[in-house]
Image (cartoon, rainbow, N blue to C red):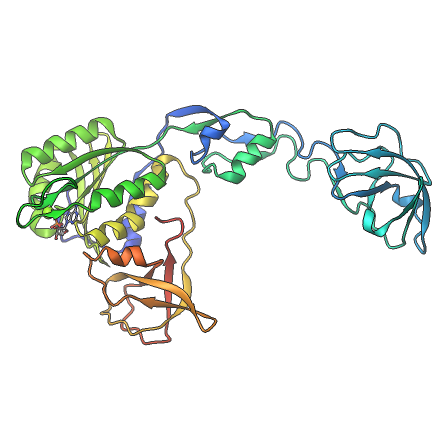
Length: 410
Ligand code: AMP
Ligand code: MG
């Protein structure tokens, strides 16, 4: 599996390989409904009854029998009772009769249509309804939302607000979800210091571990932070062994560029099966992917922006698949005019940081002037990647470019 680092892959090739390799974790948890928020459903939730359970009124008004309404003029009806939500009218609506009905109340026997109260003229226990009613108007049919036996939420779906409500509407107090993914991560580099420590000459503070903490938190993973690991084979090996012993996936940053990869490769070859990739992208060219023991390894580059690019473009969907999400989210690309010139050589797929905004009522995207792979501020200020495919060359102001919004990525 140890391909030479010269093996060079496009984004599409690398994504395909990652997604084909990983399969969902099998463990499950049974949780009280609210605690399942953000988790991934492990089994279909099937409707045990119709939703709504009965034909009912969608409006406040009068429940009537459509067949006895005068099609060409008003109809004068006698009001024989009231149906409340949660307190049904138990009689039958006969010819020439109406029942006052509230939104959500069960449609009384004999009635098939509701005339909204704004259209009706009530006086005492009579009501006059105008012509022009339609059969079934303002009613909701039993099972219209979900029929009994229908899959309400399919396995693989992430439980958000709508799913909590939907599962609750079926009366389930507990749900079966996939167990949480365990992800261990560490930074590598002799020059990296953790916050709270003084900086020795030539050192920089770690940012990747904090970025990764944020990324993995929004993924809903259980996070195992293994700190900073020095560029020493025995330290790296110990960290990888520890991570592989506890986690489903390991994310490292740094140490995979051409100069350093040989040293890392030698350790990884002993601990597992790892491929080193040179990706046809910018930023984030080097990446390692494979297995250390039973854990998947994502060896991301060291530069902070490259970490975020390679995480969002490669690791994220693989982790989501590992967590059991199915289907994976669509990641739509918007096509939008670019406001500036961008210099680019055909060859690599580039992910520039930019902002989509309205200028004089027209949406456009502006790439930032600072695009260095170490400039993390560009990720903080951006709301999108401008994605320039491999074959694209220079971009002129006004040219249409593809944009990937950060929504759902970060
Ligand atoms: P490397 O791939 O290890 O050669 O790292 C590439 C660049 O990213 C170097 O300039 C590193 O100093 C920087 N870098 C690596 N890891 C981190 C980190 N955890 N936080 C901030 N910068 C880093
Ligand atoms: Mg390094």
